[in-house]
Length: 200
Length: 200
DNA sequence: GTCTATATCTAGATAGAC
DNA sequence: GTCTATCTAGATATAGAC
Image (cartoon, rainbow over all chains, first blue to last red; front, side, top):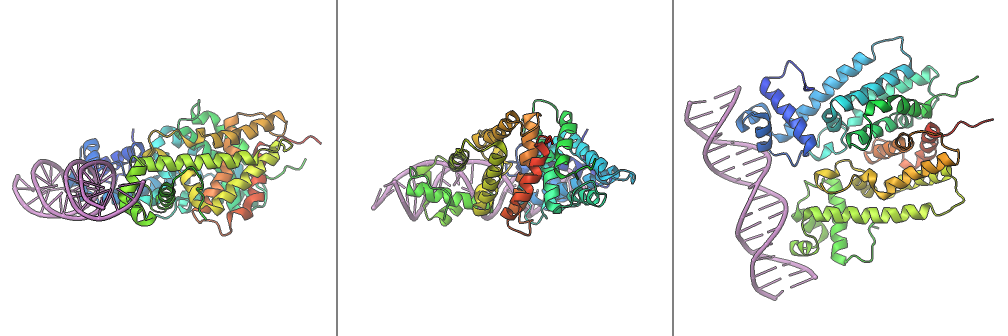
């Protein structure tokens, strides 16, 4: 079952984007030719270029779609106003790891470091809405007294850096167990780094 | 002053590798053509192909050189047997950040996630010696009672994930201050995540 | 060993029938 | 809108003089 599911997208566009996601991650953007996309998607060259301006535009449309869906999922996750920052942080970690496990290509494409090489105009991923939301949860935590006062960038790097690193290891098949089995240990461990000292 | 300094390498090889490091990071491997390398290095096509089998071989030789130098620096850093795990960890963090600040291209090339796209035979970077050493310092810390008992992979992801994430932010020009100014705060913060509870 | 000139190939993109 | 056939540019890699 594929990840992309925007009903506004035509059948061919969806086919092409799904194939692009698969091939760009498996072989890399530059090692994927238009003929490769034709073969994998079953859509002809002409139709591809009817739907997309050029190859770069396919990658951009793919990224836009993924970020749009991710943002929606993330917002749904944070709807409950009774959750405190620690609970929200845990929910985010679970969702990050779950997505990496269920849709590794999605995580790999979005989290990859080298977007600029083939999408020079794209804003850095860490300034995208989903990443900003991650930081906001920690800033809420500071206001709630659950996270100690510190530079928000440092807090975010420390609290999510470990989780993202674990996800990268999992995507690179460097972990013996499925990523989700590490969820509790990694989220509690990383949270310790920013948690306020508990007064007894 | 360039980073590469192996006296065993010929003048032309050094020129080519230095240009490759610059261009592969600035434009990306696939956006760098042999003519680009010729222009930037001042070495002719023929001489490049005399020294290297093909373009991929240039990247492999570059990676090998960088890892070799990095390993040497890292070993020098950990020579002092009187340092405990926390001191070693701090020294490693300083060195990681200092290298990213002084030689951003080196860090960017070595830490980039997508090596496999142009060096399919290369072992994943996290199984290279310098990365293994990072984990060992934490395992020593567990034996010394400074790091709490936990899965070594989790410990490493958490302790270094935040630091590496900060370095990535710095390389992406997302930080207002030079990376070194964050050294103390980030290393202390990340260490907290794995530090053993202090008995009072 | 170093250079210039060039062969070869395949990619991205287009034209135009249907 | 979709397809096949094709153009063209530019890349990698080589040949062969010096």
